[in-house]
Structures are given as C-alpha cells and as structure tokens.
Image 1 (cartoon, helix red, strand yellow):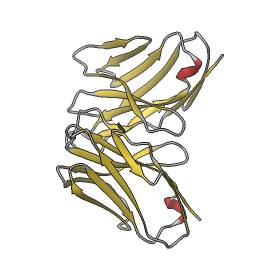
Image 2 (tube, chains in turn brown, red; image 1 turned 90 degrees about the vertical axis):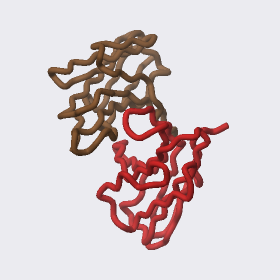
Image 3 (cartoon, helix red, strand yellow; image 1 turned 180 degrees about the horizontal axis):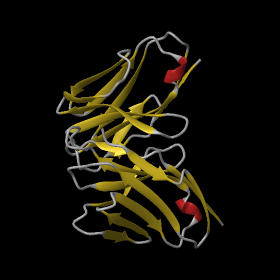
Length: 114
Length: 113
C-alpha cells in the first residue's frame, strides 16, 4: 500500500513570498506525480504534474522538483499571491501490488496574506 | 458545460436513513471514482470503475454500494446512514485508470444528524 507524507499541514506566507510544500512516498513502479489545488467549496483540480524523466517542471509561478533517490518531490510557488490561498494535495501512484492508482497526501492549507 | 456533475450538492438527513448521490461526466472518460473527504480535508478513495467494471473497492463499510449503469454515470448508495458518514463526497473521472489527470466534481456535502 502506498504511503504519501505531506508537509507542512498549514503554511502562511506573505504576498510575494515563496511557498514550499514537500511530499515523500514509499515505493512506486510508476512515474507520475501530480499536485492538485482545492479552493473552499470546490473539488480538487490538477495544478501541475511531473513524469520524472526530468527532475524539475515549471509552469508559470509553479515548479515541481523531484528527487527520485530520496523518494521526495516538492511544490514551489514563486511570488505567492492571495489568490493562491487554497489546499494543496500531492499524490503518488501505487506500488507494484496496488497498481497505478493515486494515493493523496494529507493536504497543505496555504494562506497568502496581502 | 459542467464536466463532472454531482447531485445533490447538499444532503442533510437523519441517522438510519438510506440516501443516494449521483454523478455524471460528459468527458467521454472510461474511469470514474468516488472519494470521501473528511473534516480534516483528507481525500480517501472509496471506489473506482473502469468501463463499468469495479476495479477499486477500498475498505469501506458494505453499507456503501456504488453502481455504474454506463460509463458516464457512477452513483453511490448509502444504507443505514451513521453520524461518521458526514463528509464531502467527490466523484471524479479520468481518461483511463492510473497515471491520468482526474477531474473532480463539485462535491456533495452530507450531514447526518
């Protein structure tokens, strides 16, 4: 069974600052690591994902960094904005016995103060 | 057009009642999911169907029964509701099972009194 540990549980950042959320996974035979963003009262939505033939993927202000040997990946939000305030979930595919279904981290509640 | 829709949006009911939540996706996806999100925001998968076939059935009380009449619909029926069933239930779909983007519905907020 895949385990995904996400930290921190909550994060408060000033506008313009950098938000960093970390995730660690156990084992996986698959390479696909997405981050989902959830606003209050809404369903989660895919923010950015990495298939780690590369160690980093950047889309606008959002960057995923992936360290395969350490089994860790992180989300960096540059120039954080109040509109980024949301809950962020990392996810990792299962191990060999549980197939490629996604297991989600416990979520990080990000608050960006104006 | 809403890609993944759920009805109802809110559901308030008494303990012991039976209720259903409906989900429809118009994305032409093969795979659909039910997730439960508790008060701490933890997202836990409950079921997944691929082409109307059940492929994930997590350790969920058998009071919960999913039904997929066709690829575009996945309903969740809950018997004998308990206080601990209060949560937000999300339906999601993906093109195929596994390493694919999952598209979530808006959620159904269930409160059991």
